Amino acid sequence: MKHADTLFWNVLLIDGSGAAPAHGDLAVVGDRIAAIGDLSAWTAAREIDGGGLALGPGFIDSHTHDDRAILGDPADMTCKVSQGVTTVIVGNCGVSLAPLKSTTRPVAPLDLLGDESWWVYGSFAAYAARLAAQPPAVNALALVGHMSLRVAVMGEELDREARPDEIAAMRALLAQALDEGAAGFSTGLAYPPSRAATTAEVSGIATPLAAHDALYVTHLRDEGTRVVEAIEEALEIGRTVGCAVVLSHHKCALRENFGRSRDTLALIERSSAAQRVDLDAYPYAASSTALLVELLRDDLPVQITWSLACPEAAGRMLADIADEWGVDQGETARRLQPAGAVYFSMDEGDVRRILAHPRTMIGSDGLPHDRLPHPRLWGSFPRVLGHYARDVGLFPLETAVHKMTGMPAHVFGLEDRGVLRPGAFADLVLFDPATVIDRATFADPVQAAGGIAEVWVNGASAYTPEAGRVTAAAGRLLRRRPAL
Ligand code: ZN
Image 1 (tube, helix red, strand yellow):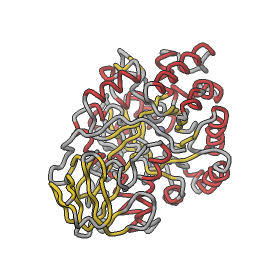
Image 2 (tube, helix red, strand yellow):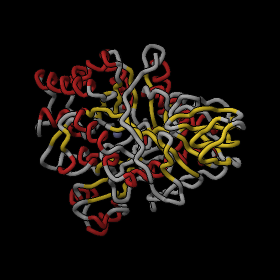
Image 3 (spheres, rainbow, N blue to C red):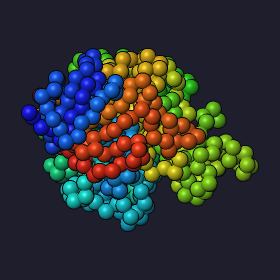
Image 4 (spheres, helix red, strand yellow):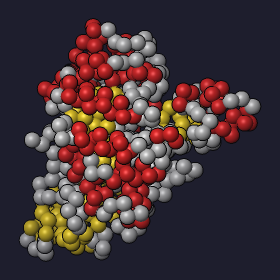
């Protein structure tokens, strides 16, 4: 007899590769999958009868702002683990907690990670040491944010292009962080603290990516009228530097741009013959970020997610508050600062076309510290599985699972993750394909998914709906190991 720690009998195995599901048994020993197939000769400390449930690799959230959330109590990550997420990519949109020290609340949107008390990691090594000393609830791979580097090097003078000496200083900080384990460089070129950066500034900072085989991950300069030019800029940076590119939370925002995902996806496809380019998306037709006055338009519905000046505004529509106060939306937004918002800016047809594209991974872009967050924080993965794959029929279940496991593991270089095979890490999610569904809504966004039975991180049981919260801190800071 062979002995396992955990043994799954007769589960529907969805292996993360995109291959059709197959019934079988799976054994876990320690933090790894030990065997898959007919395991009737095995015994185990804990045996789980699948009874029609599906077992997949733990989901990888390709796009998060969990830099700070993974430092807190493991229960702070219940928003993700309750969906089946076992690994998060942090440091997106130019916003990373390391390397930046600040004694004041940083400029928006950097402050989405927290006030001045959180900006204490002057190096990536210091951030990594904190995660090693106090393990996170999930595995994490971290990017270094351009906006954080700009504030570290340029202080408050952010409305201009960096000088050559400043570009050199940011490049040195990036190179050091890559040496210390960061997986790439992210930008958020649409945001005021980064907008003045030229293409040459970004390429100039990003040069160390090539030698480290690290990634350039970008929230594009424009996701609306000039989205095609913005994609071309990102591709140019990837070619100049000689690195792979990931386009973050791809969308075509604002009414006049509805339908343009046909053009953007065609451009991405054409380009992918000559350079590595991938993308992520979340399954909603609304975005969320800081409440920025320059984003407001009369035809764009906006819902407040948090406001320091007026906490009771959270959950309300900006237009309703403006009516009540007898001022326009711009003035209302100024009075709510600092604040966050949901923008109902996308077309459902574009959302579906982008989600279904073969190079699109799932990334929640959830904002874990918002008072009434966009529902993507708690709902993205079950919504893709239950709503888009099962109910809408946008793609088969195994394709949905691939977009949240094998595909991001390959793009981000997560060795032995995102796959069910002997030797791989036992990041696992047991769920019911017939009932899995998101429950978080724009009105009531803090809701765990339905149909997730149990989640394991590195072999440790980390979540059950009965517990209702994360019960283990079994995650690790990961290093990128690109497959050749
Ligand atoms: Zn972003």
